[in-house]
Image (cartoon, rainbow, N blue to C red; front, side, top):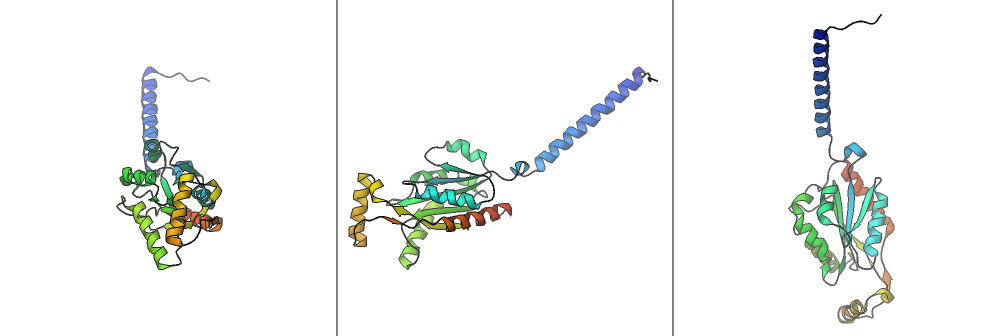
Length: 221
């Protein structure tokens, strides 16, 4: 038998329902605020931002991304809106190829402009260059490249890695070819030639290491 409800009971029940909805909404908001950024959708959003001249740094970034067992976006500094990108990701890995002038100026400008926002969101950096670490002079040169890259940061990341690059002479612009020929003859005492020291396996392993640090919440430490 259908029960009739008095006007007083209806008002009372409606008020209780409204309070219940408000409480549920407030609880939902408080839970949402406690979920770490990015973790509500399967983990933090990660981007590898890189500067490349002839593709070796881009390849290294791609191999690195494969080692990170989560979704990673590869972003070429030459093609992105940096103001938009800096707000879209929870963690960044930043790298640059090294040319005669050192680290790419677009990367150093990015680091300088967003140094404060990158704090605690930068688990690692990398460079790709022709210098090898086997000699003391090579180690010092690589250290200077990282000083260039990290200069704007209050706290440079502990995890940084130098990778070998490559040169394919026939792909060089005439300007770059002439500059390198002069460098090779004057400083290396040899003729410019093709070489390739890129290393997919090492880049993959570095990606795995960075992924573990990000999952531990140890970005920039």
